[in-house]
Length: 336
Image 1 (cartoon, one colour):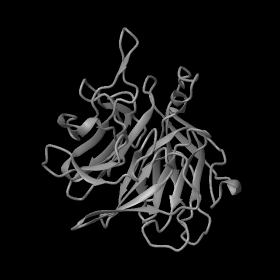
Image 2 (cartoon, rainbow, N blue to C red):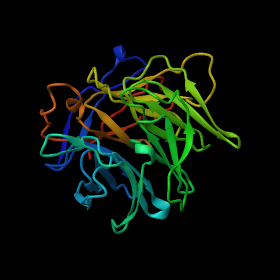
Image 3 (cartoon, one colour):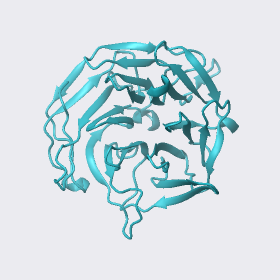
């Protein structure tokens, strides 16, 4: 299930000046497992991979062996975000009914969105928490206490589930965190507690700073808008890694924005680390390694292309360069 070739993939500060990378590796997912999305990595190298359209969660071992960790059920019908709280042995996920259920009359109904928690040792369902007010739970972040942050794509809200709490509470709400047809998507939490979120249809990023008086929301000035910002995570060096879903252009990218939290007189530069991906949606990072779920779901959003389902789906693995002196950022695909 491992496919490889040598194709140019990435690099410097502008899309027009991409330079070749050396190697590419794609982890092929089992036949029948479609539209991968949520992804998390354990310290032993095991990956957990969820789907936009199925509650099944795969376990990908470091040796390449792929097994079903959780089969899905009536309560957990998707895993569009996965975040691992390894300290407490919990795999958190967001289950959103993206496509809905089509009845005999052709009418599509959508089940209430929710988040869930699984015991990482047994796969047992520990908790299921429904989204308030008909919200669309999209992406998640975990804090050191085990609290869960969650973006709502329908409302300009970020929710928080405190450790031991039974209901999601509004952590931040601001009308600027709204765009049509899809609002908030990716979310990343920095070590200092500041949160960055992206507007999927609006192409903008925002910084949300907690304080005793509440949360402060500030727009982040960028050199250009991002075509459908989706999954994001802070790299070990503090830079923000963002996936550009690129529904219109079809050229999905992995981006890097350095010093994202520091004030600046000029808009933040956006570096392209990898391009030519098909609907990249979520990612996880460890040291210099980055794993990206390539959902290939763009066809579902283009009129007339809905039935053109790809025959295979993949995880993409990248390695950041070890040199800290090079001014040009690039990624190398590593063989397994």
